[in-house]
Length: 403
Image (cartoon, rainbow, N blue to C red):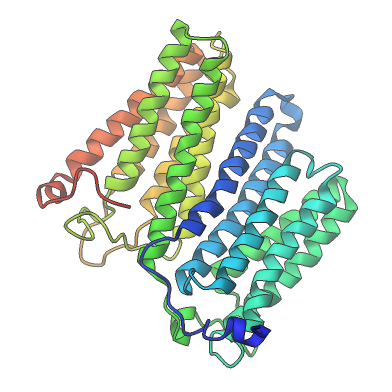
């Protein structure tokens, strides 16, 4: 029988695999449900009175960011240490169940289930670095785990306080708690005397290949939400002229998102002849947050147009339909590490500007025309981006690269 010390032995010296494991894919199944819940909240935000739109939208952004923090930290954990180890598998499974509980409580998290949501979130975010602090005793990386633990203990107090207080206080406490976590992650969790040393300076390497593959997989899961929202909206009443046009538009948007995400090269040069080996930037985690958030907004927008294609269109729906792709383009343009030798490609920034400029006029068009316009602009950005990277494609960039 293994003792607790033997169970975690060798964790600090283990290295992650180049490819993601099947357990990590299983972990993402919970996020299929979680993203659907979040998409439902965004759709509900569009139907409420405008006096409470900002507060409701703020709650949705808070939930989305909190769920993202959990996924991002777990992806980094599995990209740092060997995810095939039983101890890491136990952590992933426990986090998976906790995330399922969070997704179930989302609709009433600002109501009767606030305490359940906050306690579950704190257990996940504090439990992970607490176990690592214990498991990495005698290893240099233990200092980093201890710093992460301290920051999450500080935010955990605010999460619990918000869950208990309710009302406006809940939103204030939870926003402060999430802000602490995001600042900590952006600054590598600095502490007095313990410093702010990054993992790679402690002899621990984060596998960029593994992490990039996890990002690719999560992107595909988010992309499926567009198909689910549009397909489900069309399925119930059946095919109509407006519904069919919007369904085609959503499909064009899906292909455009996929094409831009996998084939855009920030510097105009592929990382490898096959297009693989994306060098992630320091802010890649936040970039993917924008990418996924933009896709969810776009998915909800198409679904709402199918459900109510009759004019006039609400300005909030226009903001969702055009704002979603803008977030996606900004996130994708900052996903990769900048090159000091190659010029930065600005196609996606120009595409975001084109969407922003076109959006105000759309309030005068029928909803179906607005959805079609989004698809046409995205397709145009995709083709323009492909032309800008023609040289990279001619050097052998694969037409269908692996993850």
